[in-house]
Image (tube, rainbow, N blue to C red; front, side):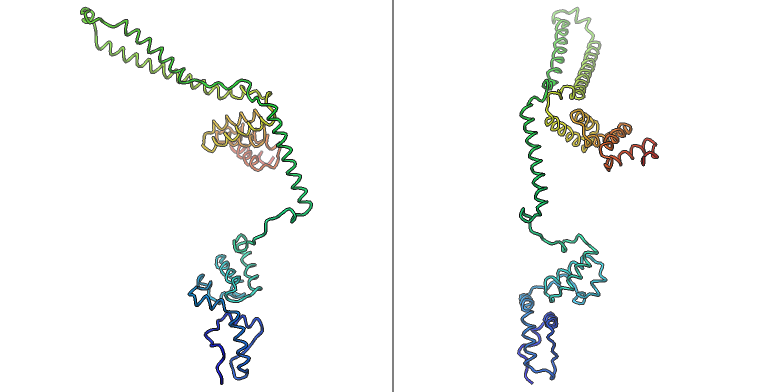
Length: 356
């Protein structure tokens, strides 16, 4: 007997599987000629060249890298496997073709993986970016319409902004806190200094020095310092009240009649965003103030919805319920408003009204 042209150690299990796919079957027995066996080895070695090359270079196969036994590449195991990570690795191995090309088995593995983990990255398919010539005519018309509507709206807004540039009837007064406080302190200091000069005892007036009582004078100094502290606190409290009053009356200074619709929308959005920032910071009183100003400028359901949640945080459930009802009158299926309305009714002891 002559030896085959290719030694058996050059043939891997993958090559045997590949050969069986091409229905080339041979058994190394005397029943077949060596010429036919050599043809079989030619096919097997040709389809397994890459694997042999990788093995020679010392690179690990995916089976070794993922620690997956070759027996797991079967319909039975894949059908029973519930480990998403292992199925992902099996799909990767089957797609690589390192162990042979099995389209049906690969599809079956992908199908099983889709059942267990539909959001797997392995199942994602890259698609080309859609271009205009790839869209349907109706889709192109709809996109063109949306773009034209947006451009028309922006042109109208730009025209409004150009026509009405006056945003305030009178500029907002900036309270000069330091100057106000400084002038008052200067007056007090001047008065005290004048009184001190008038009451000062001359160095040569011995009879006056005999009558001078140190303890009494120290008490007077302490009293004057206490009075100054009280006056300072009163001034600070007065300034604080003025600032708060101006904050609360800020919307009264703004002349809404002199503003265009676009300017009102922009300013209302700005106030709403300020309210959102204050709400996230946990300052619910300030958030409520900004929401009130925004609603005065331009009332919309988003701001009412936000203000309702602020009222809930402040435990003002009746006011929050009113805002929720305003939102639901415009948009009856607004989920946030429905949930907040139910929360308000629950706190008000009217849980039976939730479903009405």
